[in-house]
Image (cartoon, rainbow, N blue to C red; front, side, top):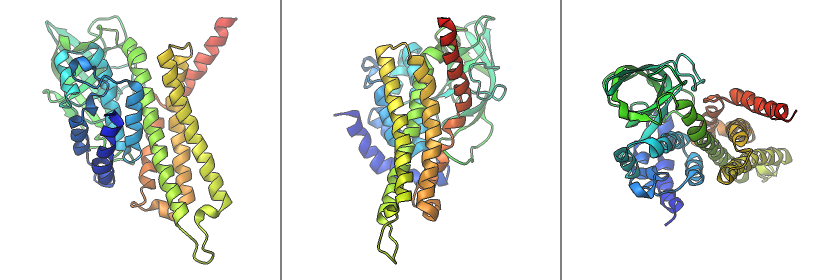
Length: 373
């Protein structure tokens, strides 16, 4: 049985029916996570050695994209779980890897900080070595699944002077960890995103992922390709959902005086066509990014930098167009387009933001030319 055949009934029977209430009540999609866990999909990228499905980033991207068509909040929770899992799978303890593979454990990234905002690669939170233990202090500005996840993949300054950062697995229930606010925002209202503060949180030094001070390498080499691709997939799924709903609306609704449908208007069809092209462009770039990673192509990192920015900005345009062609009906909650419109706003300002990525891409292009001279 394919993983998509496992996923589809969960989307149909659990995720989609609850999507409106998840948004309206800012309700964490616990039932969806439980169902995904029972189906083995929380362990999709976990190795078969520890009981996981042993699949890769391409399959994770498909799962996130499919869920985002109906509930981007749930897709974002799963995105952050997979993003944390890939680091735990490579560097973490076996018992934790087994728990994730078995669907008993949800993890998430805790990187962006109040002091550095979206510049997550430069944490100001500290890690102090005390024998075989480490004491963490820090203030994360926004953590998906805050207090709902079982663990945080947490960044800090290294315990020693060398290196920019270190990465730890932190039990979310430890004393000294606290959510400082409840999220009540515009979009992605069900992902329980909130600030988390650590004050004197004591963990074993064995919770370190990789080497002390080597967090930057984990962020850039292990995490960024996964994170960027999955966020892009969430944006692509959101566009798919908005366009499907918009197309159904303009096709089915008619003008009484003429009997023609809204879709009979050439202007409306042209808007729809441009939006579909934009969504497909983002999808093709996402797929080429996956192909570049698989082949180890020289342009892989450039594609990784491009993919999130491309999809995030496309989602802004496409969901705006979906609202436009559906007119006043798009503002109704039951149509579902305005929810996807709001959810689509997040990716462009989620670290690394589109503007930061544009700067990185521009630097990469200029550096490539400079090296040839």
